[in-house]
Amino acid sequence: MYAELALASISFTLINHQNTDLLDQQNRFINLLQDAVKEND
Image (cartoon, rainbow, N blue to C red; front, side, top):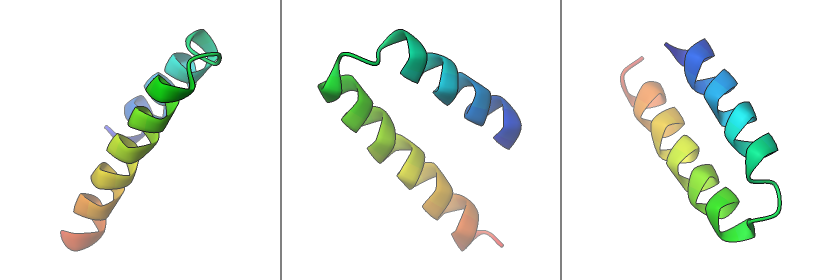
């Protein structure tokens, strides 16, 4: 699942590289997911 999220994130970044608002939102979302994974370890 984590690998799929990483690949989707890379794809999203490549497609939306000019939209800094979307990239910032994506970055915050990925950080939330990573924090949730860390808490469940």
